Amino acid sequence: MDILFTPTGLRGLTSFGGLFLFMAIENLFPFRKRVDPILRHYGVNLLIAGGNAAILGIAFGGAVVAYARLLETRGIGLLHLFPVSLGWNIVLSLLFLDFVTYLWHMAYHRAPLLWRLHRVHHTDRDLDVTSASRFHLSEIGLSTLLRLGVMTLWGPAWISVMIFEGTLLAAAQFQHSNFKIPDPF
Image (cartoon, one colour):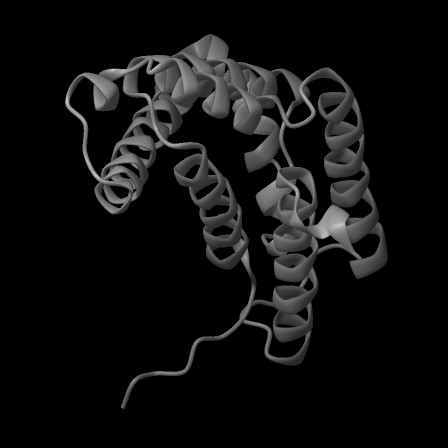
């Protein structure tokens, strides 16, 4: 049970929890009719995601959170030059990391070389929860390296990084899910 409360365990719990929750909802209340057979579609996307996770898990493992802990203990980053409470660190870090992620995502759409990597995500014929994890291995690697650089500049608390990583994944899974959201009225 202790493995669940490690950074890797919590990320896995968030990943699989969101995957199965949104997968169940989108199969009960689909928004669009599928183009490809569901098992083939799930198989391809989950094979890509699983392969990436296995390779990057070996290469980076819990490096992002471990690096955030190192920065925090050594007082590296802007938030250490202008100390704020943990609550403000979390709020400011979530906003800053989300903004940088947005800019990075825009770069993937606008820079031809980056688009060549990112279009793997956009070639999915059936947009669903599994599409949130369908990325070129190099795109994930580049995004991770960028995040490490941004963290060095910013200096978020490690818990801020944990919350951001989990929230980013859950939000992506929700945004890509193929389920009908009822009208409010």
